[in-house]
Length: 266
Image (cartoon, rainbow, N blue to C red; front, side, top):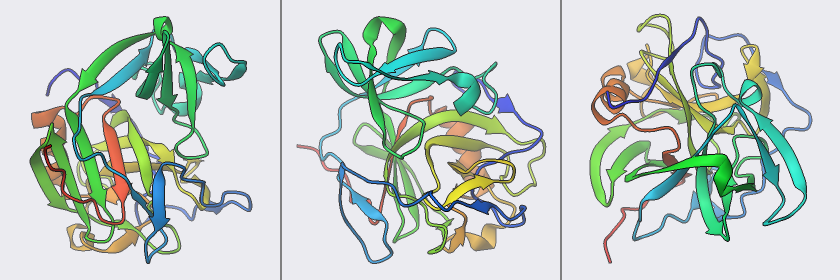
């Protein structure tokens, strides 16, 4: 594995597996606005406009365990984001963001909060910057997950996704944390990536926030089905490959769409 710390957990709260306690359905948690995506497809999940020529993605990591987010360049304070509030194991996982745009020493970043695809502005000097050639594209209609390194597909695998009642939300997200369940044979398999998105219809799941994740499974027959409460599940050897062989970094962008079209070079 290439440098990404794994947080071990006694229990996970990702909104993705059968067999867990019944989640709380919110009266207020509705499908969130998706400003950067096109019209919805037949199952209600929006299609993401994935760039045809993909450059490196920029990742911002907070220097401390909290960061102040602003409404705009030199704008008013929007909110404070604290690692304790958005990460499962904040002591071992840095607070990370995917950068959307850069302007005059400020960064517009995707935020790991509700509503999905929320953005805000942070001073560039409040974070350290790195970059990645990796990105993940997920097609809900064809049950596929593809990992790209630049414009080269390095992994492609079938997946299970959310049901019509508890859908996997379309949109632009990023990997916020990597978690290791206590056993390899549980509903999350050997590893789980927590994403920056949340269930559009569930407020809580299994005692915590209904966070969308990508993980393994102890039910491989469910792959290729609308089966989860929103998470993306794959075979255990595939999630192990992503962690151990590719080491997808925190901040890696994840595009979830009805049909993730192939990326072509200019």
